[in-house]
Image 1: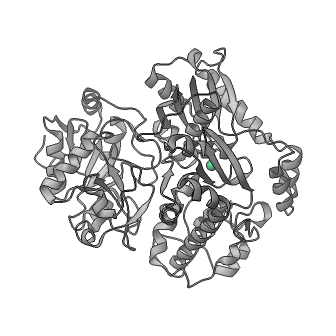
Image 2: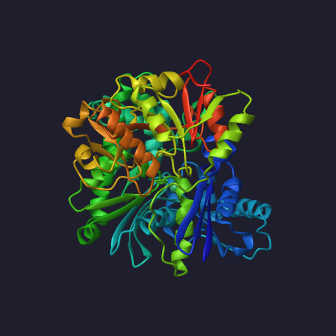
Length: 580
Ligand SMILES: [Fe+2]
């Protein structure tokens, strides 16, 4: 069957995915097309249109539209739990009880209006709502490729009401073992502290995690932010994940932490500096998250893991790669699959796979995340010819050689090739690359594109030929969803991509899923001895990742990068590298 999955129901990260007879053929995030990060409040119209065009499918051919947000009945504990825990904001509590599916109704109306605009009005596709956490679960389990009994974990801010999911998959079916509900949300807690530390929720969580190794997790005891006996979870919503009058307010903006938290920890952090005491708070909240999740996983998933040894994991918190490293180290976890689009964009995949599996399709494992649009060399040339900045450009005969020469000399290189990645990580198709053994290259990238805080780590893409030597394990890692301890003999060889704590968020590149990127790593090995590249996403700070050649050129001429390669086209600026 043909299923179109949509996301965007939680008012950010709208996306679309298309599943044809169990095979994921296209997926993309709306933000990339409309050039607005997280596409807040938007429907995935452009993304859905792209998926249909990519597969050559008309709306009449689509059997079902899967939607990652569903009505929650009063028989579920979810709405009662929410009401009881929000007694201090009676309007919210009463809404949960008496109009608890108001958001669903509004979401469905918006989605149907968007579909109407795409030609679905009388096309006959069924509209199938799926509970948000089941879609996260499905995006991990059904695409993991794991057989037998698979433990499933889902942790995010919230969906309809649920915030945390423990379950297992077997024979294509997902079973729920336990769920927690808002406000008892680890994503909500971490997000609130992210705001307190001066970052924006949805993006800043990575920064808190990056800051944590600079602090001492024992310096402050943040344990009062939650209570957990290893089975249940109660977030202290006098301090974090607060709503209504409990919110800390400044300059007309309300935050997810309370004035009481400020009384306890001091004023919220401002600016870009690494400073005390905030680095210690970051370290402490990271440790609190890790310790809490590990205990909960042991309780709820321990028996399943002891049987099967496999864990499939999604939800926004699954982007916390440090926590993932600890999950992978659990004795009963032989294999961990983290859905690369673990955040809400990935619920489009999960909704589609859930509906397809429910209808009897066998969902094929995800082989790679290159699911977006591609552009030919001719299209890249045409974009150069049409661009108002009048780029210097030329067609290359041996693109990999030219790219490796530029990189080996210590230059950062903007690199666009093949189909765009789905999910928040650039995996070598929309990337800024650097030579990680060239001292100062990370700083050069930061200087040329004024991109991010200097203490955020850059990450390596490594060839599958050397990966095991660098990370000391043969565990797959194609998506940059885990950190690994870097082997001592490699730390000095690739210093630019090793974080403060000696770890690296590695992408292992194989020739069968990305031949050209793999060949570039080989070419780097010839020049530097290391089949490793520094790889960061192709975008400027605050912007979504580049999608098209036009976007790449806009970005290139809006920063100080000197080299851009798009398919077989080299673009330079006047006076750079003698090109013209
Ligand atoms: Fe979610």
